[in-house]
Length: 85
Image (cartoon, rainbow, N blue to C red; front, side, top):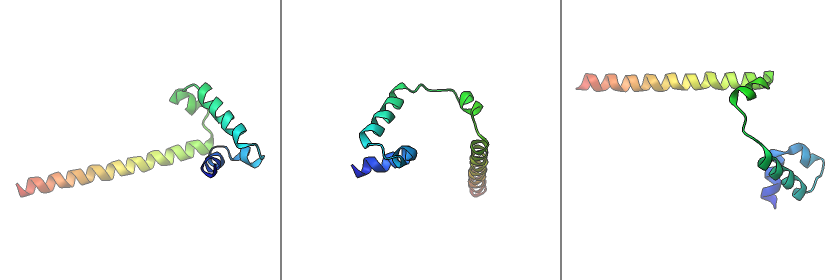
């Protein structure tokens, strides 16, 4: 039961703080998972907060940096292979 309670604290900390029973919380989480419908990326962006926007932009910037580094490594390897051949 400790693993389940740990997951509940991660998923729904506000419910755990109000001392709801584990069964009650799991029932609500299960209901939400069964009745939730997928939404489009555009819909998610429409409800984005400033905090979400900042986080998303920082992650995109980090991703671009990693891509540039990876591309330069590939370019350098190819350059060395061409020189040695």
